[in-house]
Structures are given as structure tokens and as C-alpha cells.
Image 1 (cartoon, rainbow over the protein chains, first blue to last red):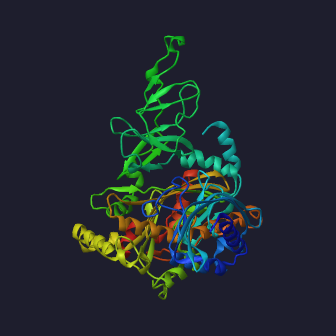
Image 2: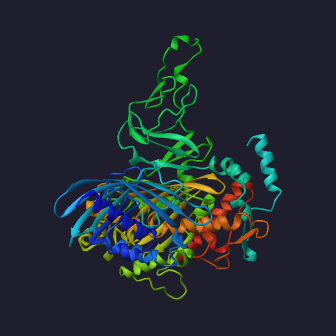
Image 3: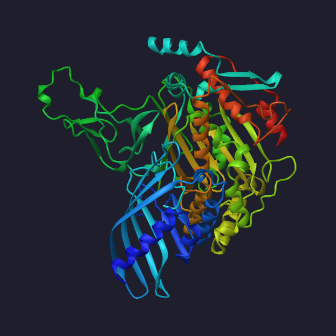
Length: 158
Length: 453
């Protein structure tokens, strides 16, 4: 498993999310996956003792996706248009079963009426190798902004 | 107010009144200009925010001497710190020399605040202790009069510190009026009465007038339509969300006027509460800890009081811009207008000092299910407020009034889904802005609410 394979996986995931194929995205997750967005002031914090923006276990990821597929997820209806640019991919550690990978992201979000913004930061993924393919055990999206500010919400999958 | 302020304000006053308040005629209307007009915001800064007590921070944020936090309070940059004598202080973050901020870090611990511009430095009790090249100053230069400036008034109630920029404001405790009862209920969760702000702050903007967040933060009328996806999530997690006849929420709750513009919705719990009611999303491993927390409350407070502390959800509004929501977790949320159509929101989680790791985890997890910019509910509130602002801003001429009469014809108690508590806020706001006395409605008095309990 080399960097190119990881990049291909990230580009595939980004394409699914930008297309709002949330069921397709769920298929990339392990059964015990976690999705984390730490608070801007404690980017390396632990969700067990720090108030995060998002700290989902797999059950809440499923609940979040179910919600986002509804017309009643008002913050995402009509859905935001997003475009994800993912770069600077580096494998930080790996063994036969698991990799720790980081990448930079710039996620552009657009809503009708000019609202939206640029979510800039870095990912830290734990990827597991299951049946010869990557599965996401944990994805942590760390925002660089000092505060969320005008971005207002992380209402889509960042 | 200065002369130009008076002129501005009288210009505002030539328009329609801010509210039409006639409870006897079952009428309460809000002038939408109050949510739009920048001149009204200018008047609010002077007549509301600079007259009241404004939440500044919690004692737990500066636990040790020298600890500090910087933030804006009442529109001013301030340093919240604990000085060498263990006193919690709130200084205006501006050098007495030329005005630069003397502290630019978010938080930390220091003995001195240092202005990098010309090198003046101040001890953490505010005293000016170093002035480079002070031999150039005349004899009249008096260091003792040039310390960091304290805010005019700074007092606390049970660890919650408030500032006022009005030197003549009444003391904090009488100002808080009936709100103290509800702060007590929050603090009594803790065995030794010590609560703390948890690490991690949520700071986000909403493109809406600040008063819309006052309304939204304890408006249970919107729960079903705005938060149906959250209710669905709770239902999927095994929570009974069936609504009995006559109610809009699964359990009964009432709105109360607490005096001085403060108000509350006081609800029987229908969802999980980390201090009392385990639900499956907390996980099996948390069940003993939640049950032990409840047992500790019963042991300490007795069955009845423990039930009150543990099994009611209370969204407390402290006039003019603080919400303490004690529900699925404890949220402390303050907000500040940047413009008539934009506010900055700061939200913290509060928990008992020394609670177990399992309980802390459940508390934070429970917070995030509903609240915050990534929660399953708050983003929809943000969207709602921004849609309100977008909807009414340019239509004020054609659609000048909002209708806010839910519950107004009732005798006695009003429900959390009525609007007594919203009218309570608007009446106080109107009185501060105009000097007009506020109307009272039948269900309005604390006696009526108590009799109904």
C-alpha cells in the first residue's frame, strides 16, 4: 500500500461526498468508524474530555447520514455544493493491517445567495486494510481557522 | 447618551413603536425594524448592553493565580485573570500608554502583561510595573494611576462572573432576580457545588440579529418543524417522542417570567440526561455511572429536590445575552451583535468538577447530539435565523409586524410552546430602549406560575 493508492482512495471518497452519494460513502467506513471535528482552540484534543464540533461513533454517523438525506435537514436543504481539494498526502505510519495517513484539505462550500465558505485544514485518517481495500476506521478533520466564525456550521460531511 | 446619540435615537422614535403590547386585547406585535435597523443597534449598545450585567466568564476558566483568558465582553476586549492574591479580575485589554492590547494570546498563565509597542508592562493585578525610559516623563507622571483598567463592576453568582459598564447598576444578585433559582438548580448537580467549563469552545457567527437568538434559544414551538430530523434520531435511539394531546412536546413544560427581563422554559425531561436518565445512545458501559449520579443526588438533596435537579430540562435566559441550557447537557451560550444582521456566538459545556471520566464522556457526547455547529439540531437553528433575517430585512415596509401572541389569552400558566417568555424579553428590552413601562398579562406573574406548579 503506497501513497498513490491512498491518494486514489481519498479522491474516490471526495468524489462521493461532493456528489452527495452518502450511501456510497458509508460503504467506505468500518463498522466501528469514528468521525471527528475537534474544536478550533484544541485541535489535538480528545473527545472524551474536550467539547468537539463533531465526535460521532458509527451510530451517530448513520444518524447523521439519515438526517442529511432528508429534506428536513434544513441547514443542508437545498444541499450545499462542495468541491474538495486534497493534497500533501503523507503516510505517517503503517503495518499490514492499518495505516495512519494525513492530508491537507480545502473544501469549498457554496449555497444559494452567496453563502458558503472555505473550510481549510488537515485530515488524519486511520485506514484499515480489509479484503485488500481500505476502510476508514477514523477520520479527523482539523480546521486551521482560529474560530469557526463566518463558516457558521459544519452541517455537511467535512 | 451623548447629544448625537439623542438625535439618532429620536430619529428612530419617529417611526412606529417597537412593540404593540395589549394583553387585554390579546395583541402583541413586534416591529420588524427592531431586527433590521442599524440605528437601533447603536441605541441598544448604549441603553441595553451598557446598562446591564453581561456574562464575562466562569471562575473555573482561571483556576490558578496568573491564569488568563482573553475575549470580548460587552463589545470590549478584556482579560479575565486570577491575580497573585487569588482574586478573579477583568481588565480592559488596552495599554494605558497608547492603547494597544497588552495580551494577544487566547489563554495562558503569566505574572505580567506586556505591551510590545513601547514596552510598558503590568503585573497580573493590573499595576503598571515597568516603563522603559521613564526618566523622560515629568514629575506629574504617576504610575500608580496608570494600571490596567478594571471594568466598572465585576461580580459573581456561584462562579458565574458578570461585568457591567454601568457603575451605578444594581448588585448582581438582585439583578438576576428569579434567575438565581435556576442557576442554583444547575450548580446543585455538583456534589461540592463546584462546576467547571470543559475544554473546547465553539465560536461561530450567525447572519441574523442577536435578538432572534434570544427567542430561538428557548422557543419550544419550533421543535417539531425545525428539528424533526433530531427527533427522528432520538426516536431511532429508543426515546419515546409521542406527543400527548394538548402539547407540542412529548412532556409538559412551562414558560416563566423571572423578573428583570429574565425568563425560562422549565420542562419535564423526555430525553436522556447525564445526571439522571440513561438512554441507549449513552452506551451500556455508562449506565451504572448515570444511575450512581442520580443516587448521589437523592442522597444529598432528598428525592423531591433530586428529581427537580435531575429530571427537568431548563433553558434559562439571563437578560440580555446569556443562555444556560440545562438539558441533555449543560450549555453556556453568550452572544454579541457585530451588526444589526450579524452576531458572534460563544458556547461552552459546563460539568461538575471531578465527575468521572465516563460521565464526562456521556455529557459531551450528549451535548453534541443536539448542540453546536456540528450537532444534529443547532445548524438548523442557524439556518432558521438566517432565513428570518433574509426574509424580513427588505420587506419591512410591506410586512412591518411579527405576531407573537401564543398563549396570551390564557389565564395562569403558559406552555414552553407559548410565547410568554419571548414577550418577557421584548417587554424588558422595550422598557430599556424607550423608558415605557411594560404591560403585564394574567399568566405573567411568578405567583401564577408557582401556583400552577
